[in-house]
Every structure is written in C-alpha cells, then in structure tokens.
Length: 179
Image 1 (cartoon, helix red, strand yellow):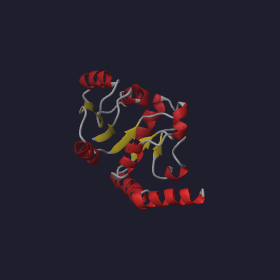
Image 2 (cartoon, helix red, strand yellow):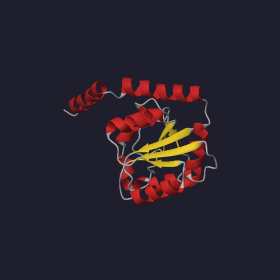
Image 3 (cartoon, one colour):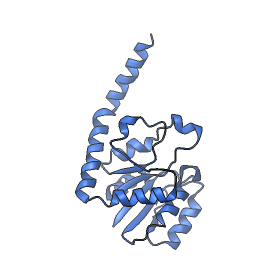
Image 4 (cartoon, one colour):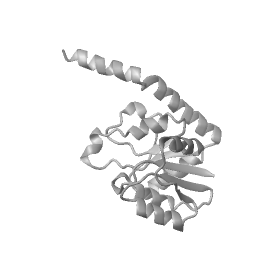
C-alpha cells in the first residue's frame, strides 16, 4: 500500500476537503489516505471515510499515536494552499514536524517558506486538484529506496540546520545586530 497521511487541523480553510476530493480521483486500490485530527471539515472526512474503503479516519489522536502513524506512512501531506495574505508570513510548524520523521513531505510552496527548504519538500505544481493528485502519484511512484533516502536526507538537514541551538543563535545574532 501507498499510504498518504495527514495529521492536523481538519479546518476547511487548510485544504482537507481538496485533499480528499483529489485523492478520490486516484484510480488505484494501492493508495490509502489516512487522516487524523478534528475541525470544521470533520463531518466531510467522516462521511468520505464511510463511503471510500481507502480513506481511513483515525479521529483526533495524541502525539504518540500520530508519530506511530507517520512512521507507517509512505508520504506525509499538508494540503494548505498558498492563498490568503497570511501565507506570506506563515511557516506551518507541521513542516518541521513532518520533515523530522524521515518521510517525504508533499505540500504547497507557501510564500512564508524560505527557499532553503525547496530541496527537501515535494511541492504541488499549482492549486488544482489534478496537480495535487499528480504530485501524490509522482512521489509515491518512486522506489522505496528513493523515498527512504529522500526522507532521511531531509531529516538529517532539519536536525542539523534547524535545531533549537542553531535557531537560538540566529535570534541572538539578530538581536545583537539591531543594537
């Protein structure tokens, strides 16, 4: 199975409906969409999970269970699109959470995500559901070895370059440079 996992807010504004609708157009029983979370799109998620055997809704899960599911997934996905003024200043914490798992991450390129992340994320080409579907299929079509290497390369980078010590040094440097 090719397992695509989303863990997080099921609020419609963050793209959960589009993710499900794009996923439903994949014509293969080899794919499963796993979803964890709660929010205003939860009823739609529950309905679609009942109608589609390859959409599995786990409900709201604790962090330990989310990590367990992330380790079982083929890829992790964040369906938040780059629309709205706030995305210029938005860097979803989910990005780092996902990257540190060592799993490939599919998402949209938000304006608030620095270019240094581009080598470690699989960006959806545009805002269409077809583009989201194509990116899921494209990434999941890679060999297991390639997926593992890609995920581990991203994990190593995040742990080395985005850890708390490095980030604290950047803050101190910024504060000192403004004196």
